[in-house]
Length: 295
Image (tube, rainbow, N blue to C red; front, top):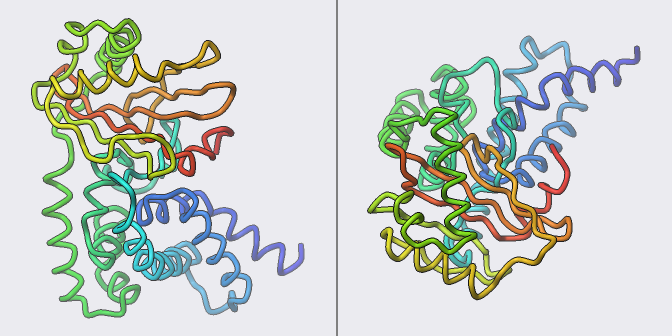
């Protein structure tokens, strides 16, 4: 085996893990793939004899690249049209890792939106330390800050993130029941059934990104969410070729909608105490294009 081939094999061994790190930092599969590809290019020119732990070395490389990329991404998202949601990921095992904390398994929309509210250094520091188990020394090296400063970054980020994490996890049976009841109520226009499956303070977050017709602000309150959903369904009915499939979206139950073989939208649900508390609707086609073929 050539040295280059060995180099590439060593990287490929950790690619899935690096994508999971980059996705949590960037909130975008496309951006995560770009970061990991740049890390690969840099890895090919590294003297392997100077690297004792390739996985740790590559994690630090990806983290630094994400920190730089987050600065420009943050500026773009400030001018984003309507609410910004993470790029959806289908499947229970997608972008998950086997050797990290419980938080590392959580890529829910709620958590990803909480991460989005952090500054880039807070986000990178928190994810490295609390999610991917890096030491404060490694976090300090990645951010080029003191360990004391990194402890403060992680502490601030932790307070924001923990407040946003759901305290209730529905069973699979309960999630299926709620999701199917929601879908049936929307498709049949059953107002009472839809009200019954939504919590009183339900919120709907729509993300069209200015690329397709979509609400430009979150919709608060059960009655408003019901009127919005039924109004949209009546005014813009899907064609006969539309296909609804129940999917795990960012680790939570939801629907994936296709029309004529083209991704149309995803709907992910935050279920609390047997009712839907939040609905996350992604319709921006730029965020759906990768769903046409499994990752």
